[in-house]
Amino acid sequence: MKFLVPFLAVTSFKTDDEAVNLANDTHYGLAASFYSQNIHRVMNIARRINAGTVSVNGFSEGNITTPFGGFRQSGFGGKDNGLEAFEQYTQTKVIWFINQ
Image (cartoon, rainbow, N blue to C red; front, top):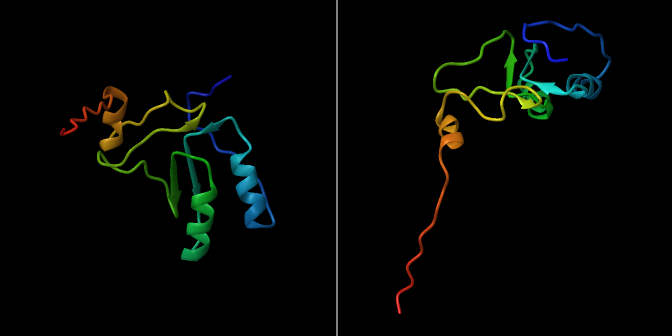
């Protein structure tokens, strides 16, 4: 079953590793949010969470230039917004001329 409405799961944890494992223990990965004032901790945790958007100290999807889309079973497999959105409508081809 896939939920099409926002929901919030609140769970306690003792270490950052445990928090990341809890966050990643799902079939979905649209967005995640967490709070911290420690920038080193923020970057360490945000890089390890498997979600398309990770918000720190609040929630935001970004703006029109920010790619938006989920990981794993969240979303349609592409990104909305940003240059990344064009990738689903384009196909790269190389034509290579060799001088002889």
